[in-house]
Picture 1: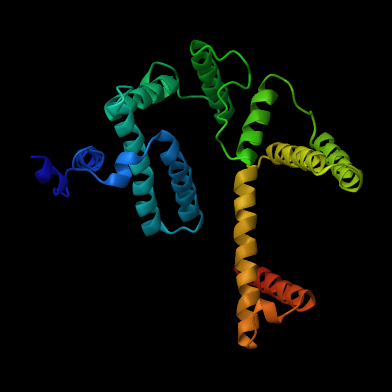
Picture 2: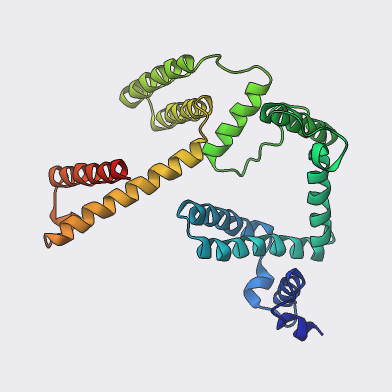
Length: 275
């Protein structure tokens, strides 16, 4: 029956669960898969989540389908290892998230009215999450912000949590003033302090920059991903123009490449204006 399930393309999630069980079988499974544990698989989980985000940003829907499957496999992998250790199962994970979504949407699945603003719904959501944290003995305002998050995203979430309890600048101008202060401290550190102290000042500046994004209604991680994509696209434009001249970046110099960068940027803006 197991072999039939594995080769049944219409079997859905049960097929994938059985495939993972077979891969992890100590006697007949894949040697690599058998050796893995939570710690070794965690980096792949993070990587797959970013590949999902990348496919969305590129609007590559066939690619997104595949990347979502890869991300789903990560959940199946972790739950298979947990089941082997007697910790929890895939079905308990599904039950827990289903219970959570029902509990967090009383205006959809309960008796509360749906007639509320987005702001009120956000406030209600946060109140429910606060009660959940209290039930887990997470008393601090910052408890529960995952340490394993990318640093920029974690900075954003930490500041968002602190702001909920009133620890926040009241105006964006205050944040910009702090950025100016931190930038000056970084310059001073570069000239007079140790590398470790320079790193600390650089971290302070990045932390405040993340806060500015929050004040502007932007998610810093998403903004930086977009900036990375723009840089990659424009540098590829430089390389294409150099190739048309029979050159590579190594054959060029900064002045030439900077001029080509400006040309690529002007071309992009012209195309955006015509659209």
